[in-house]
Amino acid sequence: MTWWAWMIIGAILLGAELFAVDAQFYLVFLGISAVLVGAADLLGLAMPEWVQWIAFAVLSIFFFFSFRKALYSRIHGQVEGFRDTLAGDSIHLADTLAPGAETRADYRGTQWTVRNIGEKDIPGGTRAAVVKVEGLTLHVSAE
Image (cartoon, rainbow, N blue to C red; front, side, top):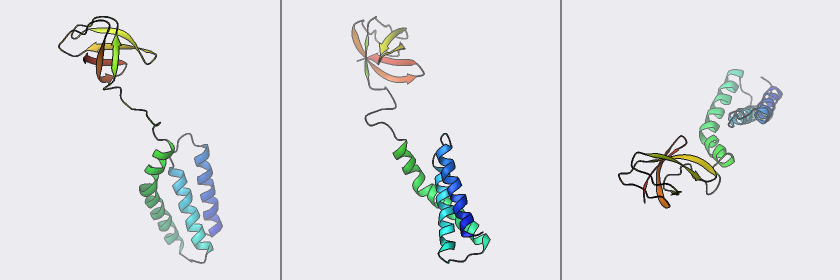
Protein backbone atom coordinates (compact mmCIF):
# COMPACT_ATOMS: atom_id res chain seq x y z
CA MET A 1 0.00 0.00 0.00
CA THR A 2 1.27 3.50 -0.69
CA TRP A 3 2.35 5.89 2.03
CA TRP A 4 -0.58 8.22 1.47
CA ALA A 5 -3.09 5.37 1.87
CA TRP A 6 -1.62 4.60 5.30
CA MET A 7 -1.83 8.30 6.19
CA ILE A 8 -5.50 8.45 5.16
CA ILE A 9 -6.30 5.32 7.18
CA GLY A 10 -4.47 6.83 10.15
CA ALA A 11 -6.37 10.11 9.83
CA ILE A 12 -9.70 8.29 9.59
CA LEU A 13 -8.94 6.21 12.68
CA LEU A 14 -7.76 9.23 14.66
CA GLY A 15 -10.84 11.19 13.58
CA ALA A 16 -13.14 8.29 14.44
CA GLU A 17 -11.80 8.36 18.01
CA LEU A 18 -13.11 11.91 18.34
CA PHE A 19 -16.63 10.90 17.34
CA ALA A 20 -16.79 7.59 19.19
CA VAL A 21 -18.69 7.78 22.47
CA ASP A 22 -15.94 6.09 24.47
CA ALA A 23 -13.51 4.14 22.31
CA GLN A 24 -11.03 4.08 25.21
CA PHE A 25 -8.10 5.08 22.98
CA TYR A 26 -8.06 1.91 20.88
CA LEU A 27 -8.58 3.85 17.67
CA VAL A 28 -5.89 6.39 18.59
CA PHE A 29 -3.22 3.73 18.73
CA LEU A 30 -4.43 2.08 15.52
CA GLY A 31 -4.30 5.50 13.85
CA ILE A 32 -0.82 6.26 15.18
CA SER A 33 0.39 2.86 13.96
CA ALA A 34 -1.01 3.48 10.48
CA VAL A 35 0.61 6.92 10.33
CA LEU A 36 3.97 5.44 11.41
CA VAL A 37 3.82 2.75 8.72
CA GLY A 38 2.96 5.45 6.15
CA ALA A 39 5.79 7.66 7.42
CA ALA A 40 8.26 4.79 7.11
CA ASP A 41 7.22 4.27 3.48
CA LEU A 42 7.39 8.04 2.83
CA LEU A 43 10.93 8.18 4.24
CA GLY A 44 12.07 5.52 1.80
CA LEU A 45 11.86 2.36 3.91
CA ALA A 46 10.43 0.16 1.15
CA MET A 47 8.50 -2.81 2.52
CA PRO A 48 6.33 -5.38 0.80
CA GLU A 49 2.64 -5.01 1.60
CA TRP A 50 2.58 -8.05 3.91
CA VAL A 51 5.45 -6.56 5.96
CA GLN A 52 3.56 -3.27 6.20
CA TRP A 53 0.51 -5.08 7.63
CA ILE A 54 2.66 -7.00 10.11
CA ALA A 55 4.40 -3.77 11.15
CA PHE A 56 0.99 -2.13 11.59
CA ALA A 57 -0.21 -5.03 13.77
CA VAL A 58 2.98 -5.16 15.86
CA LEU A 59 3.01 -1.40 16.42
CA SER A 60 -0.68 -1.42 17.37
CA ILE A 61 -0.23 -4.22 19.90
CA PHE A 62 2.89 -2.57 21.31
CA PHE A 63 1.09 0.76 21.79
CA PHE A 64 -1.99 -0.90 23.29
CA PHE A 65 -0.04 -2.71 25.95
CA SER A 66 2.54 0.00 26.59
CA PHE A 67 0.61 3.25 26.67
CA ARG A 68 -3.18 2.78 26.57
CA LYS A 69 -3.79 2.02 30.25
CA ALA A 70 -1.61 4.88 31.48
CA LEU A 71 -3.14 7.37 29.03
CA TYR A 72 -6.71 6.23 29.72
CA SER A 73 -6.28 6.43 33.50
CA ARG A 74 -4.68 9.87 33.18
CA ILE A 75 -7.50 11.23 31.02
CA HIS A 76 -10.41 9.38 32.67
CA GLY A 77 -8.82 8.90 36.08
CA GLN A 78 -10.40 9.34 39.46
CA VAL A 79 -11.16 12.76 40.79
CA GLU A 80 -8.54 13.72 43.33
CA GLY A 81 -9.76 12.95 46.84
CA PHE A 82 -12.60 10.72 45.62
CA ARG A 83 -12.84 7.21 47.07
CA ASP A 84 -14.71 4.37 45.40
CA THR A 85 -16.11 3.06 48.68
CA LEU A 86 -17.80 4.56 51.69
CA ALA A 87 -16.46 1.83 53.98
CA GLY A 88 -14.69 3.39 56.93
CA ASP A 89 -16.90 6.47 56.95
CA SER A 90 -19.08 7.40 59.87
CA ILE A 91 -22.83 8.06 59.69
CA HIS A 92 -25.14 9.77 62.19
CA LEU A 93 -28.24 7.72 63.07
CA ALA A 94 -31.33 9.46 64.42
CA ASP A 95 -33.11 6.23 65.47
CA THR A 96 -31.94 3.38 67.68
CA LEU A 97 -30.95 0.44 65.52
CA ALA A 98 -31.04 -3.12 66.87
CA PRO A 99 -28.76 -5.84 65.45
CA GLY A 100 -30.10 -6.99 62.07
CA ALA A 101 -32.62 -4.12 61.89
CA GLU A 102 -32.86 -1.50 59.16
CA THR A 103 -33.73 2.18 59.08
CA ARG A 104 -33.50 5.09 56.65
CA ALA A 105 -30.90 7.81 57.10
CA ASP A 106 -29.61 10.84 55.22
CA TYR A 107 -25.98 10.58 54.22
CA ARG A 108 -24.18 12.84 51.76
CA GLY A 109 -27.46 14.34 50.61
CA THR A 110 -29.13 11.01 49.82
CA GLN A 111 -31.53 8.72 51.65
CA TRP A 112 -29.90 5.35 52.39
CA THR A 113 -31.15 2.14 53.89
CA VAL A 114 -28.95 1.45 56.90
CA ARG A 115 -28.63 -2.08 58.30
CA ASN A 116 -26.95 -2.89 61.63
CA ILE A 117 -24.70 -5.90 61.04
CA GLY A 118 -23.05 -5.61 64.45
CA GLU A 119 -23.99 -7.50 67.61
CA LYS A 120 -24.85 -4.41 69.70
CA ASP A 121 -27.68 -1.88 69.55
CA ILE A 122 -26.71 1.47 68.05
CA PRO A 123 -28.42 4.15 70.16
CA GLY A 124 -30.27 6.96 68.37
CA GLY A 125 -28.35 10.21 68.07
CA THR A 126 -24.97 8.46 67.85
CA ARG A 127 -22.60 7.64 65.03
CA ALA A 128 -22.06 4.27 63.37
CA ALA A 129 -19.16 3.03 61.27
CA VAL A 130 -19.91 2.03 57.68
CA VAL A 131 -18.53 -1.49 57.19
CA LYS A 132 -19.58 -2.04 53.57
CA VAL A 133 -21.96 -0.80 50.91
CA GLU A 134 -24.26 -3.12 49.03
CA GLY A 135 -26.31 -1.32 46.41
CA LEU A 136 -28.13 1.47 48.26
CA THR A 137 -27.74 -0.20 51.65
CA LEU A 138 -25.11 0.84 54.16
CA HIS A 139 -24.03 -1.99 56.45
CA VAL A 140 -22.98 -0.41 59.74
CA SER A 141 -21.81 -1.36 63.20
CA ALA A 142 -21.45 0.57 66.44
CA GLU A 143 -18.36 2.76 66.69
